[in-house]
Amino acid sequence: MTDRPNILIICTDQQRWDTLGATGNPFVNTPDIDALYDTGAVVEQAYCQSPVCTPSRSGFMTGRYPSITGAYQNGQDIDDRERLLSRILADHGYTCGLSGKLHLSACNPSAEPIQERRIDDGFRVFNWSHQPASSCADQAAGTVRNHAPNWPLNDYNLWLAERDGHYDTVPHPDCAHIQIGPEARFHQTTFCAERAISFIEAHQGSKAPWMFQVNIFDPHHPFDPPAEYLDRYLDRLDDIPLPDYAPGELDDKPRAQKVDHNGAYGGGAGFAYDGMSERDHRYVRAAYFAMCDLISDQVGRMVAALDATGQRQDTLVVFMSDHGELLGDHGIYLKGPFFYEPSVHVPLAFNWPGQIAAQTVSELVELTDLVPTLLDAAGIEIEYGIQGRSLWPLLSGTDAITPRQDIYCEYYNAMPWHDRDGGAWATMVRSQNAKIVVDHGHGGGELYDLDADPGEHRNLWDAPEAAALKTAMLVRLSNRMAGTIDPRPRRRADW
Image (tube, rainbow, N blue to C red; front, side, top):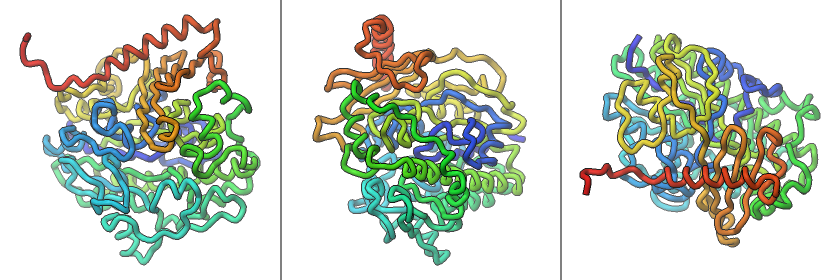
């Protein structure tokens, strides 16, 4: 047993909170993730700080709000002065590695550099694979099928070549919105897990602590599970519920939602809600669930490697996702300037045998809390400028923590799809009982009484009876926005 744990962070991309057996989903088959939940600390109310990849990742890798990291939009480069969790751990003797996606800088295979630009991130092992295919926009439109290698240094492509494998997908014959992906042994999820397993095995018997971050691209679109995983759902396809959408509910909501209802990513790609049949909606959910099942199987392999190498008792395992996926709820697919629960409520669990008891954390938690929590668990001082709060006293049972009163999220034109409409700028605050979203620059917003309307279908923004609630939530939002100001550099004198 060690006081400085190894840290294995398993981070998926675009996975909703409610896609695990442990969180009540009756369709998925996720026993290995469920086991981490059953024996660890489950954070019931974990929220990302942006519903889009780069800003969310810049937040939870620094413990700081996306708007001050230099990476509050996809396609931006994180400020090279930022201190990532991996850099801080490396400075304190940890060997740090990564497999899969990082996405803290612009990622476009048609532009330099030939790999994602890196700051001084502390990773000694960097098995980088932003994604298996080429353009995300093409993936959303369903136009990507068989894929040539993209970035020359996409380690997934090199891994495939070592195995005479290929990332080939074919259209599903019954649904144009999903694809049949490569068999599980050639999937990018498997690649991420196998690079992690190699790292774990290499550290058997090592006295120095390590951190490895497994950044799986799934269940991000394109929805391309292996056939053997999707087939499990076909006999019960009609039992899968349709998206939670009430026709007409978007009439009094921000314009971006109406645009994406007509096609994800600003109306210019696939997943036009009204153009999809009920069977299409169920197929997409089945494919998404199947991708989550594959992730669980690979989580099981990584945990088994910890057991086989005698490192399980010394390793703190984190399971999480960067943000969610709408899956047709509220008539919208994928993601964007939307702060519904399926977009911002994410899975988060901490598991360290003998050190973290099985428990449920009911407090509101932000992903900015990840960095200070892990530093605290490792006995490392939390650096000045980190804005998240450590959960370690609560997880370790050593002390209580002051519960958060609300959650703050931001979307500062994070993706370019709405630029022709002046961009999309929005912020959100969620308390235990209410949620407010302000659509900056376009007027209007959203207000929900979560006790009366947990599904967020009735917008109370203009409702006279909700005026007091609206005022109170606007004050909360303004306070949280003020609180995101960068505390760096530290004050040196009184004047």
